[in-house]
Every structure is written in C-alpha cells, then in structure tokens.
Length: 202
Image 1: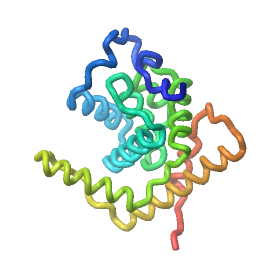
Image 2: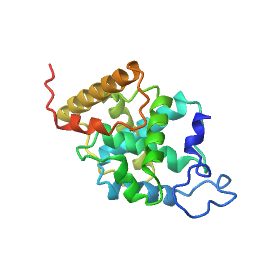
Image 3: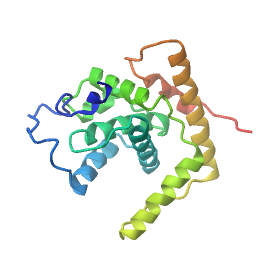
Image 4: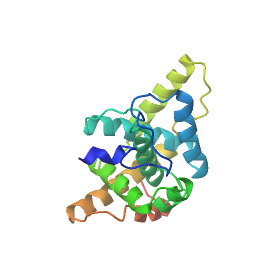
C-alpha cells in the first residue's frame, strides 16, 4: 500500500526501537515543534517554506484521503518539508542533506518517500500566490487567537511572482518526467538548479 511509506514502524527515522504503542498516543505540540524546528534549523529553511509545507500536508491529506496520526506524522511532515524546500527555498537542499540531519535514514528511503509523496499529490506542487496568501492569513489569525508571535511578513509582489514562476516551472518539470514514463527513484534533486534562473513575468 502506497501510504505505508509514512508508517514509522515500517520506515523508522532512527535505529532506536519503535515502541509497540507508537501509533496510539498523539504527539504533544512541543514534540511536533521540536521535530519541525530541528529540520528547518539544520537545513536553514525559511519561514515561507513552512507555509508551502503546510499546503503540501493538507493537499496530501485531501488527495490521498488519509489521516495524519501518531504513527505517520513525522514522515508526512518530512516529505512535505523535503518537497517545499526544493520548490521554494533558495538553498540547495538535497535528499542526502536530510540523511545527514536524520542520521539513520537512507538516501533510498528519502527518494522513495519523495517519489510516493509526489504521486499521492498527483504531482500537483503548484502553489499559487492566492493559496499562499490564504494560508498566511489563516496562520496569522491562528497565532493571534493563541497569543503567539507571527514573524512572517505578508507576501510581497516580488515574492508572489517568484512563487508563481517557481511553482509553474517545477510543475512543468514533474509533468514532463511523468509523461516520459520515468520512475523517479533518483528524486527531483535536479530541480535545485531551477532556483537560480531568473524568470521574466509579463
């Protein structure tokens, strides 16, 4: 089953033994925060990448009709962060970089996680600026309701155009690879070069 790629018992993130009740106890907010912060800090990802990550997680839950739970949340977030970092951030983050952060995970496992995540998203990695803005304002409202700080600035015209261009370019590349019938076990690390190409928008 394709959704097994997210199961931590089948695909552990560390060599430590996964407790038998790993899928019975919901993680605390602090635990989720520490996991995400560790990845974002080590990979030097931006706050904007976090918004794109959230878009991908929600898209995965909708498209694949699965629930996020105690036994799969880490790998779902990891897959979403991996994709978001390649689509949005200027930093070249490769699958092998995540293997250096999560020392016990293999490149092959990361590649497979990415490939299956993309398939479950139906290769829809496009994030229009309107979608980004919606998530931004939803998160800002949520943080205000819970008396939390919200360091992000609104999406500027420049960033909106950049997001649209990068999303379209990556979307086209994924679709081209899919049309060519390629099985992408080597991941989409080659999209990193796309970030440095200036786009002219009319």
